[in-house]
Length: 402
Ligand SMILES: *[C@@H]1O[C@H](CO)[C@@H](O)[C@H](O)[C@H]1NC(C)=O
Picture (spheres, rainbow, N blue to C red):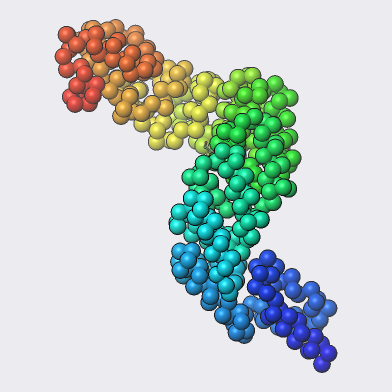
């Protein structure tokens, strides 16, 4: 009987817990007073918390919350029901203030709705003491209001972290490496995780490792600004990649070194690297050819199979260039086939077929110069002899090959 009474008390306590507490404390934490009880009662208590329908208050809160999530936050009824598992309230007061604050900071309706769907508890966060200082902080380091709204609505976790214990220490570390707020903001826009992880875990040791190898400050900053996820990898994984890059023959003092680290970072990128390796082999490149291309342009190991196949097909099969020549100048693989390669190569072939230029013009002479220079050298110069040349270049007249 005593046990039964005890259970009732706990149950009543549970039902009378103010809604605010229900948000931050999961019902499971309320199990503790029952921990000594018999298993049957524990399971009864669980049932009570799983089915709050037994309580009128909770049901009312529940339906109020759902209605609010739909009408004021723009959630679908499905998302509202699922969000209402994480947040309950009976009055619009606090949530209204939160929404007003976000609107004030330039969040659109859709962004607010995304933010609330991902982190419904934020509706009950103290706008003045908890939310405002974080918004102000990110604005103060130069995140524009447009980027602020976009970044936080796609990952609102930042708003749930402590400014003093998490966000500011991360900022201090980033500032010590990147030196400028502008770069910190760039990195933040790539991943909010650089502000969510304890920097002493991976970031600091990884940066220290690069420095030990003699990677200059500006290259460390380059990697951290543009590819923060690479520097956030587990320390052992990161060191393994850095050593591999060094063994391939990259020079730590050059910026290619950190670009190569990026190309090999993470499972996804590593598998793209391997895919590229296999695709280049199909075109008769040796391992040395591939590593030559990688060293000249690390991102040539991050291209899609389709892009490589299309460009190589054009160079080798249409232009008749030796495949391995491309490995010496892999930058041409990045050019747009439609906008740069085809127009220029068409002009080149016409000039060649008319005997106006010699075969031994290298692909770099044709493809590398800026457009103005190319036009002067290959189009304007021959306008008298070949009046159609500009039209061919502009794709208005099709050149079908010699
Ligand atoms: C893999 O490459 C992509 C594209 O550059 C980049 O966004 C991502 O951060 C890289 N992954 C890692 C772990 O560095």
